Length: 88
Image 1 (tube, rainbow, N blue to C red):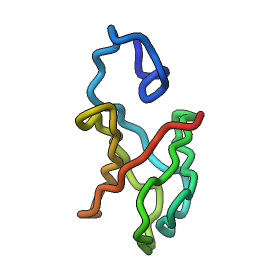
Image 2 (image 1 turned 90 degrees about the vertical axis):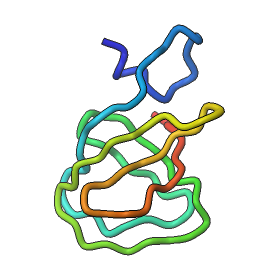
Image 3 (image 1 turned 180 degrees about the vertical axis):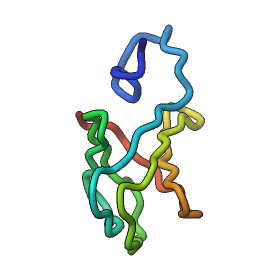
């Protein structure tokens, strides 16, 4: 399975379009450059300049592939989808 490499610089052959996980514990939102560690061990950094505040517990997360190599974070119950980049 290629989901452990999803979001990292990899050969063009990678075809996964999304990865699902959750954020363990309390999640209060983000600011620009916030790093968010998912339960699957992946760490993603927010690349948005607009902060967001939430009061969530163990929210489900889906990271989806966008156009031109971009990625977006979808959070259960949240309408915003910030652009993210995988750092770990």
